[in-house]
Amino acid sequence: MAQARSDSEVRPRGRPPVRSDDETRRIVFDAARHAFARDGYEATSTEELARRAGISTRTLYRLFPGKAALFEAMCDDRLERLLSAVDLQGSDEVDIETGLRAALLACADLALDPEVVALQRMVLQESAAFPDLAANFYKNGISRTVTALAGWLRVQVRRKRIVIEDAEEAAGMLIGMVASAPQRAAIYGGLPLPSRKQIERRVQTCAALFLDGCRAAPA
Image (cartoon, rainbow, N blue to C red; front, top):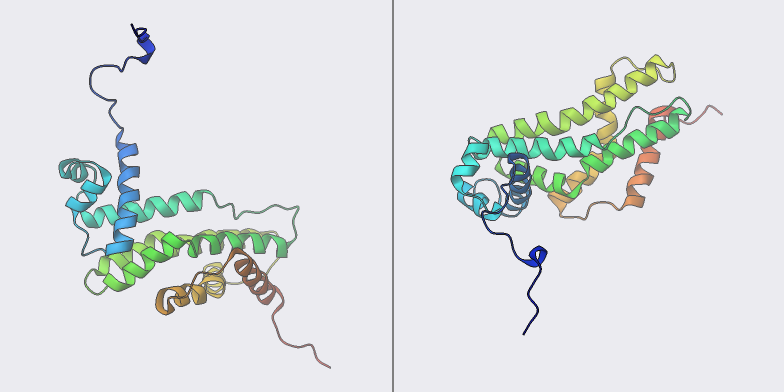
């Protein structure tokens, strides 16, 4: 006769443990990112999102009032997680060029993240029919990245390492130099995003242009 299984091997009876709302939101966000990027905003229904997340539409609507609210929360969550891993403040121990390269590299990693670029492509495609999508993406993504870099630049101004009049404007210019061309190439030209080595080389060039310019010295 087969040996009886121990109590620890017997499957417990009763209902499975209930997921928290935070955990459920994470699952919904993951499902939504893939669905929106693949099928687009308009073509993705709330019923499909609920099915992909393994929850009922009732639960989905309890967590998010509608698809637009879900999209905004999803973008905010993704960018918050990326930004939380970015430290732009730097240290007094590093020189300004090293610190600027590190700050620009962090911004480039965010702006050129494949999922962020896929969402941006979708937002551009759907913005005529859903203008709020573009506004929310700008508010929760692009402007927050500029604000973070502008804060880093202000710290360098206070430390008397650089002299600029408008940190927000300078931050926008720097991010444009680092990320705009590769983004456009990927979104409109279908080209692959740059490799890590290519991004680092681009960051190095942008930092040198910002700090030293490119005008030739007088003969």
